[in-house]
Image (cartoon, rainbow, N blue to C red; front, side, top):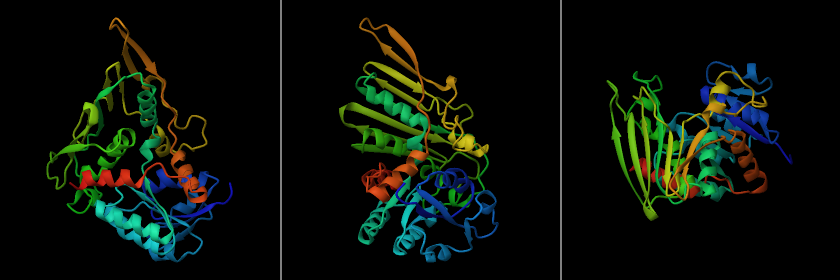
Length: 337
């Protein structure tokens, strides 16, 4: 690697410990330099030598830091991103980037004016599920695709402890929690929709925010994409269902990276990111006599490190980051509507 990008992380909760620290520590192009820990100092136990700061201002004042990872509650993203840019840092921001598209445009413009870059953390593009679906679609085996369903379901009846998700404030609720994942997967594969229709619901007892949504994305050539998520699904259905003129592809949500990381697996383990054989997607195509031919498609390996490699290449070699500004704006216009 030409240089190591000196990186500061703003939290060491679940997202910091699972989705960020292992990768910035494991990628030779990054130096895990500092972390913000306001109370308990836990990161040094896992990463000896990492500086633990008490305040966000300490992170900003560290002149060595080149990249700040904003993995804090949703309502802080705009302020922390703006201040990091003004302090001369590149920024990686977890989803949702901002509550509104206007705020996103403001921050993208600020970054350009300062010669810095903003990256949105959409790790699900590097899920085995997402990359497998992309491969099947691009193969042409489904023909002209007419109908797509993406689901992200959970069963969580109790009101969660994370108030930034459960209280009626900016960028709270299920729509802003799981909506960005589903919208990014759809927009990255099919582009910005021609139009959309959205339904929100509140079904858990005492909930103050939406815990159900359905979004219908309408595309040219009669392609319809449906995105659905709920916190009250006791029997989750298949997460990915695609139908086309030549066949169908059905697959469950089965990427293993998050579970492996939560269980303590290291990213250099040979089986990291590899799905179980029984998680293969089912591809059904029709022959010339309209007889169904069923095949089970091996999943691509999950690879969240691909996101960090893309960031490295963008900062060091100016290679375009695959999660584009236009895609993020299109996503937020739907979220905020």
